[in-house]
Image (tube, rainbow, N blue to C red; front, side, top):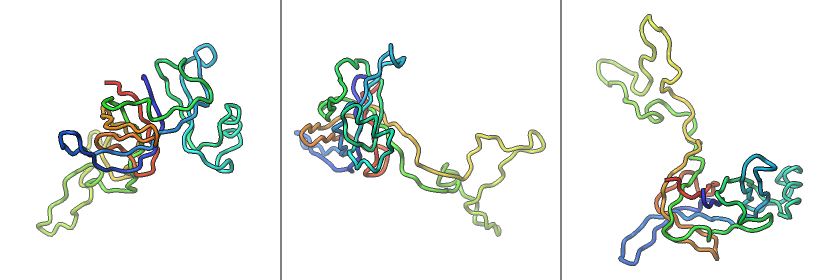
Length: 208
């Protein structure tokens, strides 16, 4: 990928284009992200840029993490992630990546953790149909017959069943940057992105 940055989802709003068209956008607080480590093929086996995001108090992170950040001359941060960029030579340890790495009109892929729904039934989780409400049936939203007959006589592992829903890593691809505000470290991305407000998101150059 060409560029990448860590950010926090603020929420959704709308902006108006020059022709008066209303565009729904998601506001992302992108950076500033200090570079904590540069990985190379000779030393680590691959090229990557490691960056930190969201300053916190030192007591909120572990001592090994704090030692790693102090070695790079960076204060305590909550998140530390790395990205395999096409050109890592343009970055140095201690340099700061800001929202201006992306410009208006560029397309990005946004990765986040979806909202957790807890335990859900098969209707809400997998959009299955409900049972009939006639002829004395009281099984409206429960799962019906699951297995086959005598052969194979078991429920396959891929069967859609009730269970934990949400809180999964989701990537939405090919979203357009509507506005980039480097002074306030804000990115306005067209459309919706995964996750709740305040959640961590990874904004990367699109692969398509």
